[in-house]
Length: 68
Image 1 (cartoon, rainbow, N blue to C red):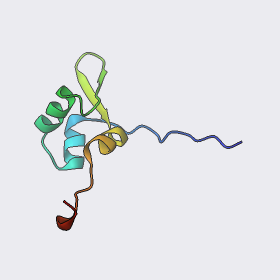
Image 2: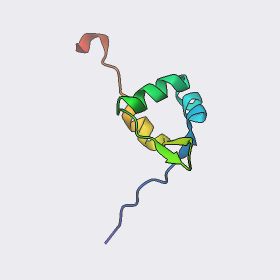
Image 3: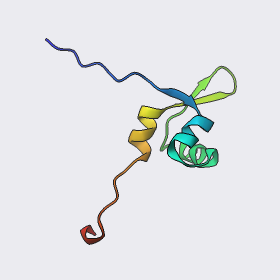
Image 4: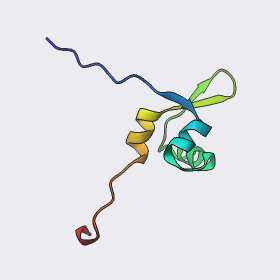
């Protein structure tokens, strides 16, 4: 029997995640507020996102020009 293991979490702060995706932190905060992106509180104020989850939630392929 083989067991599938989940990929390791890559928890980062909003600044690092924004740099990773090439967006501003305000964009990520909007996505957290509208429920598109899941965020986690660390302690009292620190907010972290899992880059694996963020990539799955935010990155979508674009349709080719003739595929509309």
